[in-house]
Length: 134
Image 1: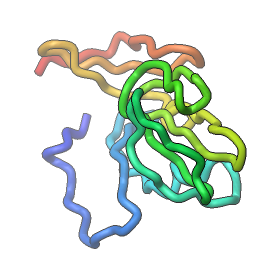
Image 2: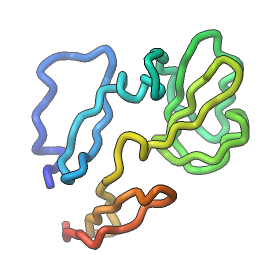
Image 3: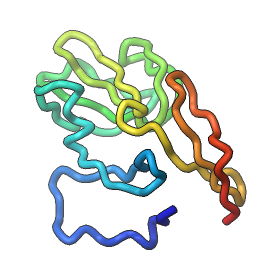
Image 4: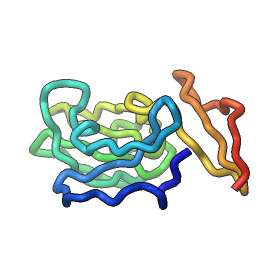
């Protein structure tokens, strides 16, 4: 496990930004926001900000996306249930939900003084049995 404090600093400033993730070997990686902004197709989407349960995005005039900050029902995004780090993409007429697990299927969570590796099984996160005491 590579801890955040041991990771190298980005040598160059980025105008697109990065999101820290974990690959399928449990190694910490940087995903460019453009990967998340691709919307699963060739068209590019502009990052519109963080979405909270109470966020009212109105009707965007551009192709854009929000990254969810909360777990719950986002009433102003088509009354859809989403988790933290899921994304809503404006398709021109409604909000499409893209789950975080589309890009990452393994992550490490902290539970008290224990780090646990969890994997996305297609509908929920479940523990793999790999744990570390911190």
